[in-house]
Length: 447
Image 1 (spheres, rainbow, N blue to C red):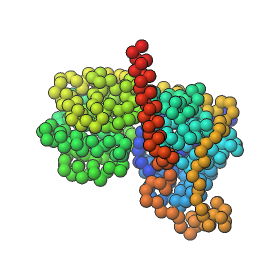
Image 2 (cartoon, rainbow, N blue to C red):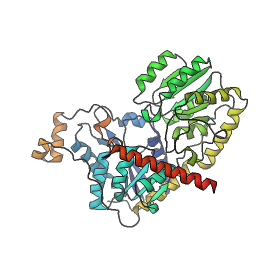
Image 3 (tube, rainbow, N blue to C red):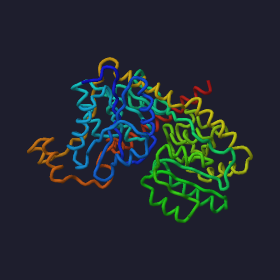
Image 4 (cartoon, helix red, strand yellow):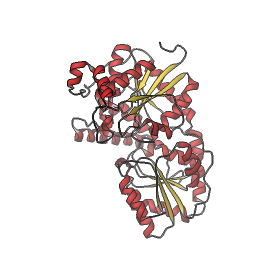
């Protein structure tokens, strides 16, 4: 039976990355939702090799959850696990996130029971945006973490304006601020995924050039991802100066990493709202960030005021900002103080939760949206399923220990990896949408 006093929202989360901004943001929302009339529950993907909910939970505070057991690697197993979770939790709203099978099950259940679908766009991924565009008529409410992502949900994906919201990321206050003085060596920090879209390999060029200029530095990279091997090789060359750390819980970052750094780095070409920069700013760190698309409109990372900014891919420009931090007296204290004050005043967790509740309330208002959506990829053929049926076939697979081996995290397929029919056309459409957004922003500023 549905709860009568508190509504329930189910977050479906992938666990192939041990820690990330999306997971951290969702758990912080969950902590605040409990006092706002909503019961948050997480459904965590589990696979044979790559999706590990136990490892994932170690990086985050405690939260109520269930496990989506997809260890056989079969589409039957994945979708049955989601169906069972929805039946057990019986949520009013589900956030399928990036999990492709969750969209398939949620859309099917929505047609039968009226469950509502909400979607949050955490960043700029062309595949994910294309998918959401093709399914926007089934989304009851959507939100972006920054002005650019909110605008793309509306103008690029086609969500109605009255169902599109801005939910700015909020972070907790620091427990121990960084020193006002720059350390010797200067202590540089990167926290995030080691993946191509983050341009994290720019950190290697940065370290090489810092070393050639004989600038005393220590660069710590906290995370995991596809570029781990290249970064490990670079760390071996820069023994003691370039350090790699596996993902750690947010509490550890707050207690041991942010307070012991001077600046936090970002190399990305485009971002929704970088969570790690906000957390660093909350501790008085100086953001040394690429001029990523979407930065201007956020109004948070202002050159020379609350951040030091360099062009995307210009690691020498980044080095100049680092040298300024070392040589200009009081620069860290001034920028760090402004950054910390800005985050404390405008980016608290309470404000984020209040905005998110508006999304949930809008999602459950009125009739469910049941418009057209592109058919999702079929589950594939299975002689066992054809002979026994979906649930019995999956039971047999688990009983005898057989399944499908996947070479990577595709054991739980993601919408991020579902290429649109015409990638070039979609890429051009996305560039034009971002150009239009930036042009309208510049026009509004001038006026």
